[in-house]
Length: 202
Image 1 (cartoon, rainbow, N blue to C red):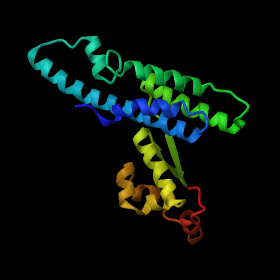
Image 2: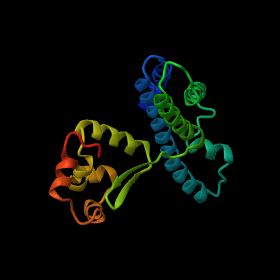
Image 3: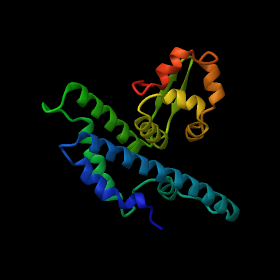
Image 4: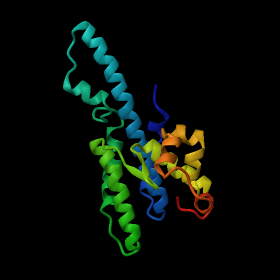
């Protein structure tokens, strides 16, 4: 069966080529990186199962099989479009132009270099959410996309929600008690108001 993410690749390539919408290009790049990571994870799971079967039957697993099973696009029907996507992402990671501010160019380059690192080298992304006295480390596109979505929905107060909301703790694999104790055993009334405020950046 074919994953639905693969069917989105032509559309995502079109989105990446949109010159007038930076946020659409960034979302498309993030989505491609997430699809690649999911393919890689599935490939590793399949490889582990295959290795078990081959060990039982004393069959060697050659390098090409191993590479393909671990998420490589080489030899698949999607190889050409992934190559095109990588070329566009590479261009965006080095793009310069007078129509963008320095800050926007810097952010775009950093984002697309991260997407390219995932696609070409299987590198995991990394984002750290700082707490007073501690930090929550995220190292998958799944977690980072979820973080961005939840922050947009909450419009601030993310840290307080993570400290007290079991559902968010389950999503991010966080221990609310550990986070709470690492931040000094609780927040003051003023800090609670600041963290729970809609204008909070936390």
